[in-house]
Amino acid sequence: MADFAPGSAEITKAGITTRDGTFFNIVNLITAFSLGQSMTSISLMGSITVIDGVGMLESAPLRGEELLEISLTGSDFDTIIDLRAQIYKIDGVSIGAATANVSYTLHFITAESWNASKRKIIKPYTNISSSAAAEDVFRTYFDNIKAFTPNSPAELKETLSWGTTRFTLQNNITRKFVIQPSVGQLKAIIPNLSPASAMNFLAARSFSNESISNSYRFFETVDGYYFVTDEWLIDFAVKNSSNIIPLKFNATQSKEPTAAESQVQSILTISQPTRVDTGADLFSGGYTNRVWEIDLVRRVVEDKQYSYINGAAAYTDMSGTKRSIGDDIHTKEFIEETFTVENASRSMIIRDYAQSGKTPGILRQDQHYAEIISNRKMHSHHMEQTAITITMRGRLDIRPGQIVEIDAQNFSADRKGEDNEQLSGNYLVKSTAHNLSGTDLNLSAQLIKYGWT
Image 1: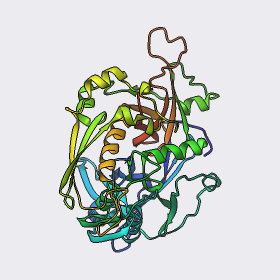
Image 2: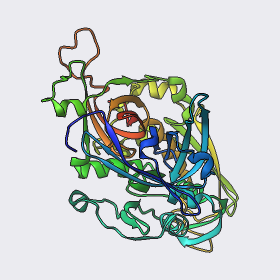
Image 3: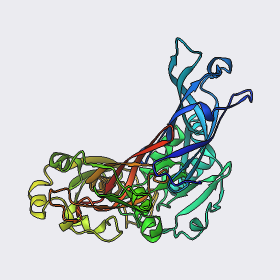
Image 4: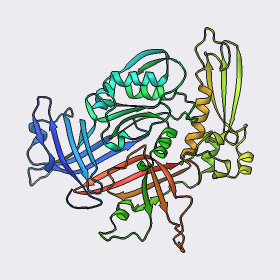
């Protein structure tokens, strides 16, 4: 773009196509745009508010079944977002008494997610890994996929670990599907679920030797879809360090035009809703948990007990290095005294599959359910032990699944230019909300960091 204007963005294209093929150019009708993305959401969601002076709402009429194509360009890094979406809801209709203008809000999701949402799956999967089943579900219900085509030279050079594969969507070559392989053979029936819920069903049953947390997630961003673990996202950022986004929190940020880099990296506010919640620590299963495993074949019950103190070194921090119990928010002595086997979170599973290390027989392979449940509880709890919300101007390029590196100064009265060690460091972007009003773009993002330091 011609001028550098951090904190602004422009809608460069916006059009609605009705079922009968009628096209409306609505670029000049849009007054506001919002886009929400999250690692805990099966699809991104957006909305646009329009002031309709041409009677489109009634004359078309708009029925909540139209296609929307919209493009935005951010002024800070010329980030371009192209969305091919489905309008599914119209609300907030307000009719001006003295004018012919009508304002209303159109809500949308991507075309791929919409097409998948109209389907249901009842399908068995046998002798196939969970990730392979997830690939089959995606191909069948979201979009067919083909060999990955990079969208930039930088993307071509990126390193992927642990056998992870990227695909390009057949019908939208600007988007991708990233899938981290799981191990073991699945035997399950997807019980009449939507395709997105089926992906979560498979994620909950996915086991990895590389990602000890087994924290598989299925989520969507403007880039595409991901079926990966938190540890893979961290490892990907570490191995492709140029993708880590530097941010600064400093009350003395310069507003001069020559300080462009400082302005686009500047965090306006940081909030930490919960600094410490020992009560939540106690009941989450993040420090101790037990899995009662009922073996129907051998007619025995096994009480499997898991302790974070014994397993902390198996997890990695935000820089991809091994953790130490000394890095935790609580002292080792307090953990041993407080989080006991007696008050441990409990789960129960029915074992109808072979035990690990036993001679294969008529039973299917070990499904590792006890390990998956325990590690997901522990890792997810500690992954959000330092959770913050930041606000910024602009930054259309920041989205869930990325890693940002925050340089935060102390917020004591005598800052002395020193870093706040607890708030500084690498964070995983959990969710983002971009809101555009006119040309002013604002970002609110939820960030999480494994551990206390």
